[in-house]
Image (cartoon, rainbow, N blue to C red; front, side):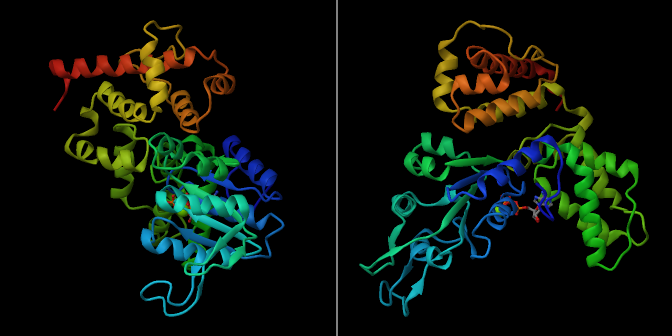
Length: 384
Ligand SMILES: Nc1ncnc2c1ncn2[C@@H]1O[C@H](COP(=O)(O)OP(=O)(O)OP(=O)(O)O)[C@@H](O)[C@H]1O
Ligand SMILES: [Mg+2]
């Protein structure tokens, strides 16, 4: 399946497009999960545009952008006089999206008290405007998106489990750009063409060295960050060869050789440390420790218990995890992603081709790796 303006032919992205193709004709709710800038909204639009509702409206609502007190009225509408300031009857997003799709962005920010009301519409296709007793029927497909770990929120009781299951009838998980590096070149070319056209320039070459630097970077802000970088570079270019600012290229190189950061928030947290030390001074173990400490925090609580109970290492699920040697990032990333999706040990084992009892041992192993790196840095091997 190809969708215009959706660039990517890597295996991971093709799997996402296949999900879009499969789910588009159905009416079921879809939950799109992924880090910031991975394309959650464009995928939601692609589902809408390739389904039977494409002639109907696509209405978006960002749950994080609207104060909690106003969200209910935004969703369901209100009658005149329903509350102070309600000077006229207003329709909500459910009514605006009738016959089409309602895209609920940042769903993790939906206040707990509103969650049962959303659950009711999803289950019964019925709702009332604020201040009205008349029940309205909703004919809306709901696509929700989040960059939060919604399953963890369920465990922490900040998100209702019943709503989680309702929304995630069909979950789609968008890979971060660093896990689909094969797509970087075509994305770069696409953005260069697009911005050149918009700015009336005729850039048609990207030097190999520049492309290599771009490909090696981890892009914590994902496609949006890459897109912004290319836009700035096109502004800077006067001839046919893309010429990003030297300072920006240097920053990309520096970020690539320093601590491997996982997400934008990790990157922000690491900013001070990275800025205050030259990258070549940073010890690999310290980098590993920081990365995996933050990753391990994402392991759901019920798993942590399981790991603690297992005193002995059952086997070496990730044999490369010896202190000082960079561990198998991809496998652990995938493992943690699967746990955050609430998959069972057995399901994860099948997906990763391992035995269920090997998985907690992998987490245990990383914990030991972190502990020994920490002890080492306490003993004074820290370069700062
Ligand atoms: N596959 C793709 N091909 C081309 N452009 C893309 C692709 N995916 C995303 N983009 C572009 O990247 C930018 C970010 O996409 P989008 O807004 O959908 O991300 P998001 O996951 O919703 O981000 P956030 O979590 O910050 O809201 C957009 O400008 C979008 O056009
Ligand atoms: Mg978005």
